Length: 71
Image 1: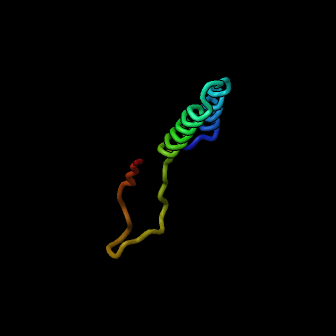
Image 2: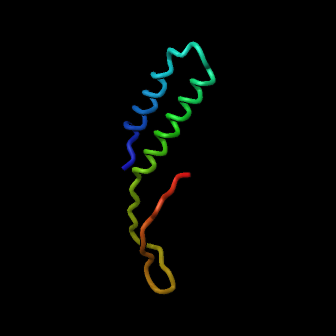
Image 3: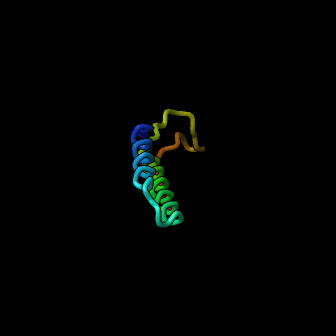
């Protein structure tokens, strides 16, 4: 299940970890970008899809497993 609070906490943590960076602005941007992207991808991976009804194939209802990959 997606959680705004969990994602917000991860984003705050990413920014707080970089607040005192004084040496390399670009390295800090790289680190924070990676942390944000990772937090968002991890949150998306927690999504649960509940199929109710409505999709049909020529031979009946659509069934199967949703498989996600991140590249």
